[in-house]
Length: 255
Image (cartoon, rainbow, N blue to C red; front, side):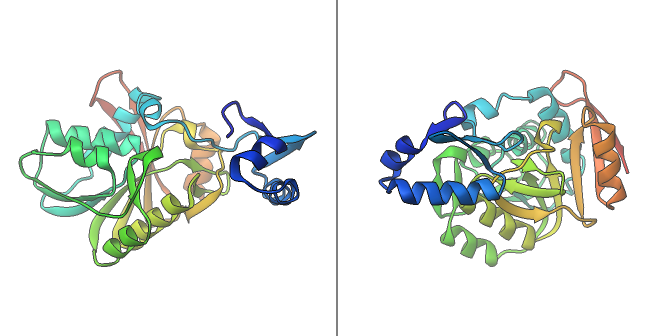
């Protein structure tokens, strides 16, 4: 619908089968929320608001940074613990490291690609939760997935972030994705957020959670110094890593 960041009211009405009046009313609400900017006869995504890109494309974006972040996350894994890996592309790099260098773990995931990456890996026991398949992220979401989570308690959650606003809140483009991520946070003893610098100072439509002092955030060193300072002043445990151009090399610094 926003293939080039813009759309017309007429196209929206035809696309969703709603009246022009309904579309105008909904656009007014989105404009008040800062998600879109109105234009004559249409609307465009506001600057700084995240838009969803295909999983296969996102998997290869900022790949060097994602690999360095994943390497730092790997160092935080505790053998014989139970961890949750979400369906994000940075977390997928962590799954890749586990495949190359297995350690005894119980892994629960809602990511189809993550589960496939860990298939037949020695020492790693994988549980894929059920639910409704969200094609855009190859993830399981919805009431059945949330019910499955409600029956679990995990030591660590490794969570990717679609967007992190200047308000230090994590956002998602999809309501079901936001809801399942919120459930993950509630069912884990600790949360480690994996987000390269491009994810900061962005907003999306649905709130997942607010960063807090009980979370760790791993990002790359290109995150602006002023943003690093703001995060640390807010009591957030920030780890930044230097990407080295290799699959696993990194140098980390923390608060």
